[in-house]
Image 1 (cartoon, helix red, strand yellow):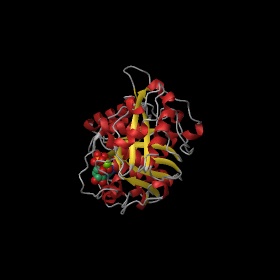
Image 2 (cartoon, protein in one colour):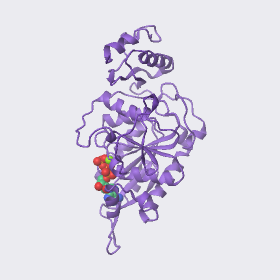
Image 3 (cartoon, helix red, strand yellow):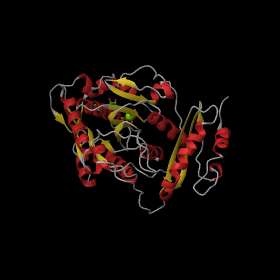
Image 4 (cartoon, rainbow, N blue to C red):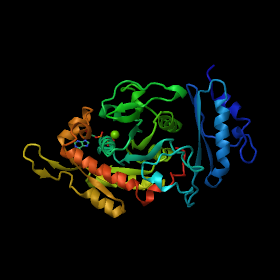
Length: 381
Ligand SMILES: Nc1ncnc2c1ncn2[C@@H]1O[C@H](COP(=O)(O)OP(=O)(O)OP(=O)(O)O)[C@@H](O)[C@H]1O
Ligand SMILES: [Mg+2]
């Protein structure tokens, strides 16, 4: 029997809010998304009341799982920040977790995005503007972290235009494992998940708010990531509602902003920094991509986009500057052929640049702000 919204709501009748109201009548439920027996929804509560609601969330999940036909249930607590209210903060996790080596186990702080069990630090690679080389940077940064001896996973959160399968030359579909989890694919020794593995390349993807949430939570929580030191998340371009929701949906330890040096891209990079600050995710730094051009024939360097803009912007915004990646034919050719430079030309100059950036990211993760709890505030898109 195919399970639907009505069955889920009926199953929730017995779950009561802290005030004793049956959940379906509490007015706090988001849209209920049911897909192939998998159920997703969120309970939207006051930021101050999240502790009281956590047992309700758990009970709701258990009740939905007990509904015949339900394969899995994922219920998130979301809290809307009232204007001017200070962000809710949970207890500080132990410093070990900050090193990117400590592995989160079990649920995170009440009301926060629960940690992904076994996954140390999750970092987003983002930009305000499209096409600045975010995915290329994300892939090579992840490989650089792998070369530093870390266990690395990659989550392609660009559900509108997934490019990680191509950049890592991964074909095929992930298999289902026991417990209905998906086995991540392997890309150069990293565990990788992308919506691109699940849909045809040509399929135009139209996502509505709750679907964005469920796609991301599914890739994050219904994949057997195992034990990872770091997960690198390739974000979709932009700083709109969808990106904001994603930034809030994933329990991020930090964000890396990619920008090209010209003014227009920098304005967007500033928006990117602003977006993460707004959701209390520390910005680990800015990478200047396509920073300068070295002629492959004569070796002469030209600053096509006025090199150095991102470094100045980082200084202005008070965030670290992580490094400059040149605009180079090899990077583009290798990237587009699924042969990222860090993996396929590890002794070359570009791999060195990415590894240096990776080392700075790793160090930033172990810095003073790294132990901060995951963001608490989620506003539904
Ligand atoms: N440093 C570089 N040198 C040369 N080419 C590059 C460099 N960085 C990225 N590119 C190329 O630029 C194009 C866009 O890069 P990429 O897909 O990584 O950008 P993006 O910001 O992820 O784009 P989108 O916004 O569409 O997700 C690709 O063809 C890529 O190979
Ligand atoms: Mg991209």
